[in-house]
Image (cartoon, rainbow, N blue to C red; front, side, top):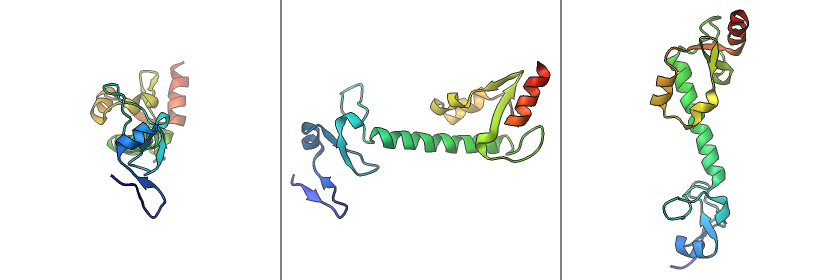
Length: 135
């Protein structure tokens, strides 16, 4: 297979030749990067299709989308004050504790919905007031 250069200057090459050179092509950003810039598969040690940077960007976007869905499922407003806020302002509160939203990053939407059963969605101000009142 011959090397071909596209308009952006990136080289299209077979993945085996790139691997031999210690490089791989990210199919998301279309850049050839060093192999250490990719996570490796446990099974065969080959790099994933997306570089680490692109994987992190995709993970963040999926998390934001998931949280938008959850906020809408909870009504899109704080249960106590009734004011709509941007998604990052909300906390999920139950029995004097809040659900750590960071835990949701590696959960499916279905599992997250199940975890949030019994919680109410509050803005951070109302959540803090409830915690303070509970003592």
